[in-house]
Amino acid sequence: MAMLRLFGLYFMLTLLMIIVGSVAGAYFGSDPFSGMIFFLVFAIAINFFSYFYSDKLVLRAYGAKIIERQDNRRLYDMVKKIADINALPMPRIAIVSSSTPNAFATGRNPKNAVVAATTGIMSILDDNELEGVMAHEMAHVKNRDTLVMCAAATIAGAIAFAARMLWWNSMFSGGRNRNVHPALLILVALTAPLAAFLLQMAVSRSREFHADATAAKLTNKPWALISALKKLEWENHRKPLDCGSPSYAAMCIVNPLRGGDFFINMFSTHPPMEKRINELEKL
Image 1 (cartoon, one colour):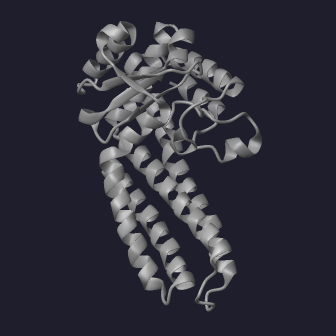
Image 2: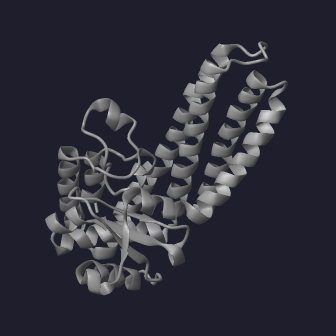
Image 3: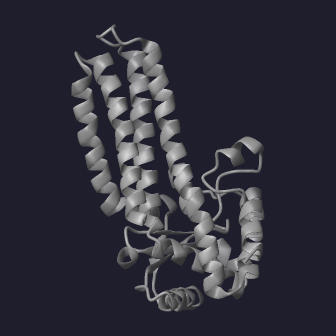
């Protein structure tokens, strides 16, 4: 199922890239096929790059540093315990120097996984709560959600960049093919990034519910994860994460970028915290 989700996501996001390319080719060139082919090649390159290198982009975006056991035995031993219970390879462990408490996992498969935590999360959570958070992140690794969400973030970011370039080029250079109405160009430039984001959001929201349930059952302490999520929600609401990229916000256990208003909740890559807690309370 993870591979089916991945291929479906790749297909839809690649299709969006081709649509942007066809409009760009029609507006700036003689026909839409030149732009379509160029953006198809570009999309294939981005897909290949995101498969092998998106984890490095995420770690770099957050300034995460890979550690060894002697650097933080509490975190290292906790992750190792969860990996052993799941019969998973020991992932690399990284720490993000930020007082805002959060955590994420990345990597294309369990053998290449990285689990990261901020310095802030280790200071405000007790051992039971931190174990619940790490179990949540290892659930993403086990279900290969890390690859799906990394790929979605990287390709969605590329689509947004391509749409912005299309928009600015149309403003300053103009199109040679006037058979394409500028309104169509504007429509594609505005809707392509939104469509890519909505695809990313749909995948991310469903994965968070599943990872919460997996973590609660693994530790047999749903109350600990509930307590951790409440603390993380409040602290990230009070002080959003001061590093990283909006494209990779979906990777974190709680949304690191937003406050609590209706619009932001509706278009968040994370499901509402109340729903997550309600689902955990049912376990």
